Length: 325
Image (cartoon, rainbow, N blue to C red; front, side, top):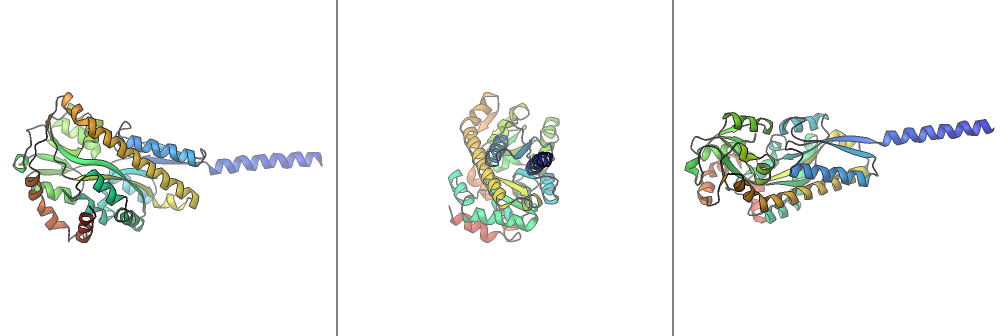
C-alpha cells in the first residue's frame, strides 16, 4: 500500500508538471520600427502586463525592426496564423479592413486630444469590431502621431515645392492619391525598404511622424523636414483571429488589458518625442520648416476625398469623425 501511495503521488507530481507546462504559452509580437521606439515601448508594456496578469504563464516575444516582414506581410501573417500579434500603422490595414481607410484622409483630425477622443470612443470601438470580419482582432488604438515630410532635395513650404519629388508613401491608396494631387511622385513602399532607398537616392523623401524620424536617425540621410502634419497616424494593436480563439475568456481579457497598456505607452512616447524631437532634428543638422501653407496643402489634397470617400464607402464615417471633434 505504501508503495502504491508513493507511486500515486509520483504520478500526481508528473501530471501537475505536465499541466503546468501545457498552460505555458508563447506569442510573437511584430512591428517594423526598431526596439528603441514608441512601438518598442508599446511592446514592452504589452509583454510586462501579460506576464503580470498571467503570473508568468504567458510570454510575449518581441519581434522588432521588421524581423517578421513589412506591415502588409505581418497583417497577412496574422490572418493565416503565422504571426500572433502586431503593432501596425493603419496605412496597409485599409487593404484588409476597408473601413479603416477613413482614418487616413488628410487634415481630418484637429489635434491629438480630438483624435484620442474619437478613437477611444464608440467610433474607434466600432472600427476595432470590424477587424473580426477579416480573421483579425483589433485590440486597441495606439499612436504614431501627425505625419510630416522629409526630403533631401529642397525645403518644402507650399504644395508647389512638392512638384516631381519622389516621396515614399505607405501602401495606401488615399495617401498615394493625396500626394499625386499635390504634385509629388508618390512611391508606395514597405518601411523595411525605405532607409536603404533614401540612402541610395532611389527616392527623394518620405513622410512620417516625429517619433519615427527620431527612432531612425533620419538626419543621417535627409536634409529637410516640413511640419505639414498632413495626416494623423494612429497605430493599432492587432491579433491573429485563430490565436485569439484559442484563448480562454479570462485570457482574452488579459490581452485586451495588455493592448490598452501598449497603446498608452506608445502615446506617452509620442508625446515625449513631439516635445523634444523637433529640437533634436535641428541639433543634428536638419532644416526644420514650421511656417507651412496648411490651407494650400488642404486644398491641394482635396481630390483624394473626392475620389475615394464615396468609393470606399467611408464618407459617412468621415463626417461622423468630423462631428465628434
